[in-house]
Image (cartoon, rainbow, N blue to C red; front, side, top):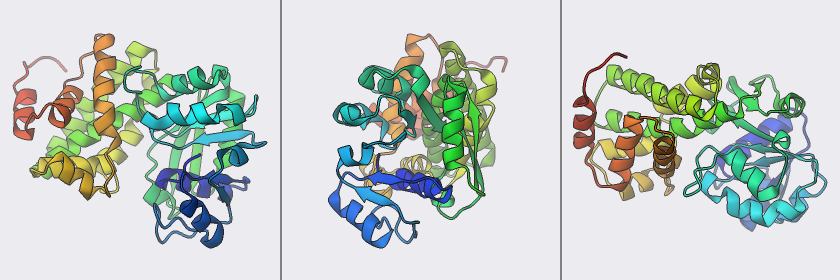
Length: 325
């Protein structure tokens, strides 16, 4: 459900794993291109896809399926689910690809799914890891984590997407996988800002490491297992998103770090606002609600939403009191 770059890339993985796939696209022209050309020229130009069925009719896409993959942006998930919930089968597994914390409610995506659809938590799974769509569609080896409190459901989803290049692991720590996925976008913005300012690898490594400390603090406060955040859904996703030029969050931050405006950063990332720009505010609020200190996240929020300059942000971080690690 969703024919953006990641949704289309994951549909390719599913099809190449031998799973029968239908893609729901919001726009008719996207569905038509997928059906007639087996391409998505709007989000993955130049990528040849295996034969998949596509439709702009959500009811038709959801009819009779046993695995519903939710690949829409985190802040639009609720509104979409509200329209789709009547067409979702009573025993279908719901697998979320979205990474974020919902603005206002401060809910994780699995919680949004449960609240809107009424699905039992054991039917809801999340997928997270170092999964840059541009590399996956080239069949470059990668690994990911599928988390669900029902291990059997996680294994069903695992079998549906396991290929020679895409290796899914299972986990029962839904909270850890979701917090890692949501927070890494914010830290990637910080790394992009540093890179745009011309700062080097020591700075980036320090930001990744201190960012990970923030993610672990918040995750543990919410009930996550630290080992999850030391794995693919934590460190793996964080490193990929913070260092790759394919990362929209890092690229967005790099424009800001070079002195560009929010509008210029959006234009440089194909007119799309990076997920971390939206998530930094909700992650910051979630941390405050649980009395968790997240100075990097706070700095990114202030740069993106309160007009703090990047040089002032760096100064505020370096000016913090020195203390034990």
